[in-house]
Each structure stands twice: as C-alpha cells, then as structure tokens.
Length: 211
Image 1 (cartoon, helix red, strand yellow):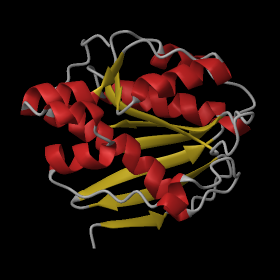
Image 2: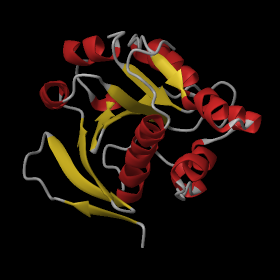
Image 3: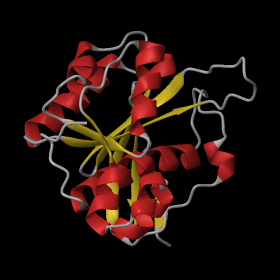
C-alpha cells in the first residue's frame, strides 16, 4: 500500500502530530490552531532551510448555494518532509510570524490553482501571500504539454512524479470546518501541500522566482 497515516498521539493539547506515508516518503505533519506552535514550526523551518520553497493549499467547507461563502478553514504549508496544517477557523489570533513568512518575497509558495487560494486567504483573513507560483504553467513548459496548463494536482502528480494521488469526493466535499478532523482529511490535506512541494522540486522552481 502506497499511502497510510499514523497518529503519534501527542499528549500536548495545543497540537497533534501525524506521520503520513506516501510511497517511500514520510511527511511529519503538525495540526494546530495555536499561534505559538505555528511560530515554532516556522522558526524551525527557517533554521534548516535558506531557500524556502513551500507547497501551499487551503480547504474550506464547500458552498452549496450561491449565497453561501464559507471561509477558509485550513491552511496547509509543506517544506520538504514537514507539513503544517493550520486550523485557521479556530485560531484566536493570526501570529505575526505567519504573516511575515507568507509575505516574504524571497520565498516561493507553490501549488495548483494557487492564485485563487491566496485570493480567498486575503479576503477571509487579510493574510497576503507575496510570491506565488502556479505549477501548471511551469510543468507545461518543461514537458512541452500545453494541456498541463489546465491540469489538476492529480494529473500533475502522475506526469511529474509518476505517482498516483487519490482525490475521494467524500473527503474533498467534506466538513473542513470540523474542530476534530478525520485521519482521511489530515492525510488528504497534507498530501495536497506535500505533492505541490515535490512537483516544484522536480521542476526546479527557485525560491527567487516571481509569481
């Protein structure tokens, strides 16, 4: 089996730790809404990485009618084999460390359709992500496949990494606003950010590239 998740059953009620196993990779995943834990994670990341490239994704409860505008519930950031899942809905305050991290033009935040994600992040929480790279255009150029400009993460994962990633509708359309996320949700949220990071690494996206 190429995918599984292990709950490390952390005793600290400020966060939960999981190991998400995807093929040969193990992604250390932290789930939290605590500003101190977010700051700690960012600090540790910056202490080990000079040229930051981060996979970025967001999730929110689906809007089932035109008048519904559910806010972003989760923000996922992945650098190398470390993923941070922030439950923004339950954050008492947004730490300055996160605002500064996402607003640093020297770092590249990569994803698929990431422009609309960061637009919603700005709209819902006034958090600005300064340097955004949509992987679709980069992949289309590298592989000389124009159709990749409209590809989803699943197709890009297959073309660039040669790996399959599941996108079950039951999880995609689930209750991302829940305080207690299921293992399936955590696994899904982690992989969206991790696969984006890995694709960027394979495509040699540089942290100095502009959106």
